[in-house]
Length: 383
Image 1: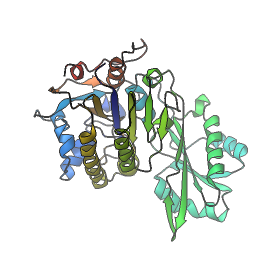
Image 2 (image 1 turned 30 degrees about the horizontal axis):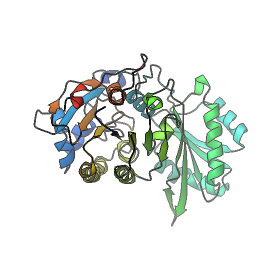
Image 3 (image 1 turned 90 degrees about the horizontal axis):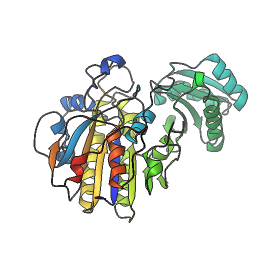
Image 4 (image 1 turned 60 degrees about the horizontal axis):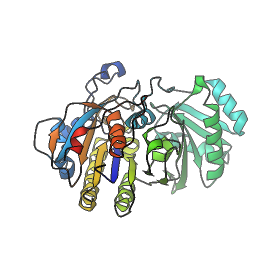
């Protein structure tokens, strides 16, 4: 074993150019990083030092850099994370522009709430449009909406309906949408409050995800710390400790705190703001500034790493903020690997999402199950 601790950080939606099959998804030409960089001047010295720009133009950098391609027939959060940990989703989850009447009727009968909205929308916009109805009905009517992802989202004013009731409604929706004809990847509770006439989403969001279809790499590891949405994404399976993050900045600070902790295993972090706040809202400058904030904290992370630590920076899909619509984009993702003991400086040919999990298993001396995809990134063990 070369590394005692592996820190894998997922910059949620940070694609690095169209995948080979992007045209099948209507995403030919998408490039999250490339288009942000073309739009604005970015100060991200640490990402560049680790080889991000080397994925576009040959240049010197530290560590190992390569692109990864997704094998599964999707471009969503669950399938992306599961594939990073070895499990491919061949049949995509259901995606709806609006949910069938039969589903809404079943949900209303099971929860004793009426639902309005039922369309693909921005969470902030639909609150501004319909939030007053929830208030006027004292929470008996709730906003239900979706997005271009496989999700069913339910809003609730936590000072009127209360978090416990909102979570109950969402858990009921999760049970109902396990039926094949309605099966979505996640049901999401979206609590909010009203301050000075403004609808403000709180950090009490809760995701109810489908459990992985097979055991993932996490189920085989000696110890896994999940930060951000990781525990939700894997339905708690294979997670030893879990820490909720209120923002991507908070998630990075939690990750940096884990560098002070003694453990042997994986620290797995999801930074969701890139996707939720900026990619889906098509906010190029917001995305760029989030990258700059991340880069500062990445610098702190690099300074605190021990000799036998390994850092893997990657993503789960793309979400080009310059692209049409609000959907994720089918892109390759970066894989930047660094350790203080790693003297090699290589840009490798394209690999697969599963290479991340395969590398982690190999490092801890665990035989990879035959159903998992991926090959270890051998160069990080050559030092």
